[in-house]
Image (cartoon, rainbow, N blue to C red; front, side, top):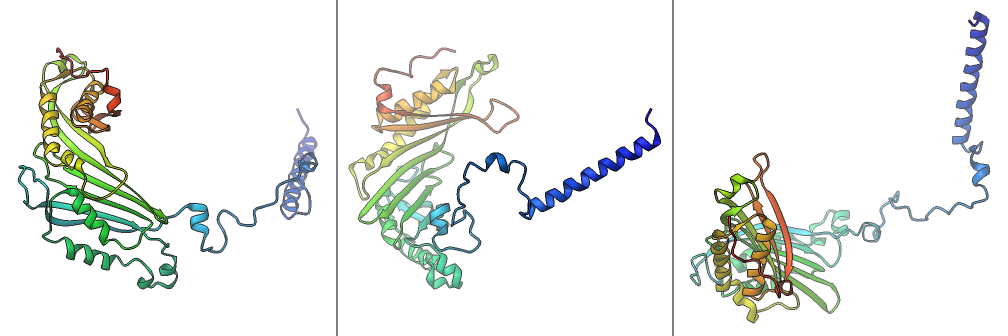
Length: 326
């Protein structure tokens, strides 16, 4: 057992050590005493701090593009129109149908000046852009989607990048999510314009025998199929391939529904491959992305899904529409 004196002496020594340690840390923080590891690292010369910190203390006009890669955008979301574009859901030409258009424009210069001076005249005025689009598109008639896209592109102000989404919610009878055309244009290099156009068919409604569980082999279950295909990559304007997204688009969806309805698969991976085979081999598309959702596979989640991307060459020596037995 320690004596009372020994205990007091231990407490006193401990307190002094803590006090000296705290004083040492304070002086080190002020630069008066080098930290203990300074002698070890003294020989290794430390790099000089950058003259332009990643987050500068003052705003630099070129900071956003140099360090963060920020691209300012002006956006008009979901402009609603009734337009006659190609065929409607009943394959009738020249009949108006609901169309929703979203435009995202990256101007050739950022919006820094407009923000600094709080002046809309120094920005890309989305009010003027809306009036231009609304005035030219209302009650318009367009023989093909390409004509509509070309018209929209011509209405745009100068831009570095352009995104246009054109959604037809009721374009196809057997599709619950509609048809989406997505145009993206890179105009950032002077004299070079690089567009791409993608077609997305949202939620083709189907039903078939699908799954490995015993109860799944007894009854058909609902499926939703999304198909995404590139349309053009080099130019805007009318092209011979427009047949792919007019009458042939209706034919393709109907063929997918009919074949899926009569099929029986254990995996949605195999079924998705079979759908991609139809899109590429039967309708001439070079590549197809197919997503299939099973909303009833697991009761506690919204849906399970598989998404694949397959090229036309993938199916040269393969056939995923072999006879399927329960």
